[in-house]
Image (cartoon, rainbow, N blue to C red):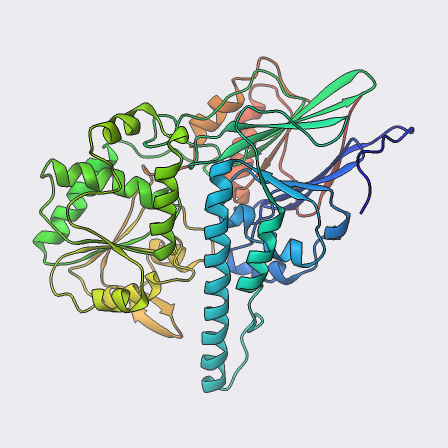
Length: 480
């Protein structure tokens, strides 16, 4: 491994290469070369069907040559290839916040288990059908690989400078996206000057429940900025709890079930926050509410541990013994047998299960049992990437393929984005606009091409330089 602590006498080039989340939402990964170091920022999994094969490709840089890695938060589109990175030769440290580290171990173990199960299921199905699928019938990595990667994880407190060598340091700032999420501020010292590169990670919403508001900055030389909602605004004509109440009450009156594809980290906890309020104020009838995700249950335990990430509203609820994570009717489902038993229940109930984009997990089984019944509602509360099952359903397709066969979509399909953990176009412009002066360049990533190009136009109205990188495109940063 190169010794990044040795200063090079010759001029050191400051470079960045974009290895994922380029004109797409998933696969966040950027290689920053600074101060004699190769630093990988994010190591995300590709989740759009069109790009799934990239997960099996060799890394664009040999992992053994990477000195350090930085992780803004634990979502798999930012972290899901970490076990593969370590398995293929990375020997450095992966730095993140303490809450992110606790959550990441849960996420990676669950990812490995799902991959093993899905690979085995696909293999059996393809053998039965006498065909081969478009992707390998082997898991990308196994549980042992996920566990082996944990030795590389190191936690750093918010607002604490971490020196990577004599020239390069990093500080994590709260991103307001999920518990433990961060923006990475990287400083590079050379020839008496300091160059600042900010990686936004996923920028959260202001006034969002549970977590604090996003951090803002006054100065930066370069900004790598997400653009997920770069071309649209969240529809907030009604408060989220009012929307949720209306959907539940309408479905209850029809005698149906509410099925909610749920992201285990943050979205599940946000839902619990609102459901707990509705239950305690009798805004919805008493129902059994199932959180059918062992990972989401474990994540909720981690949330309760890291109260340093909570906003004042949530802290006050806990002080009053009204924790949003514990309330009447809530059933935390852990085992597969308990999950199967839910589908035997007659009459209304609420089922929250992963994965949030319906790409795997228990939600697929609940959709099989419920998506063809008109009295039911499938409620989407998060972004659905192109090519995912969730996107097909949200787009209004009349039939969708689940577990190898097609199912009629007769349930009521509802999409609400007021629970989004991402800033919308207005708030993205607001966030970058907090800078006192324009940076030398802004790189827009982690957004579909249409969204990124739309945000580019909005920022260019300020007269600021903006680029939407392409896959594997490299930029030499001016460090003069």
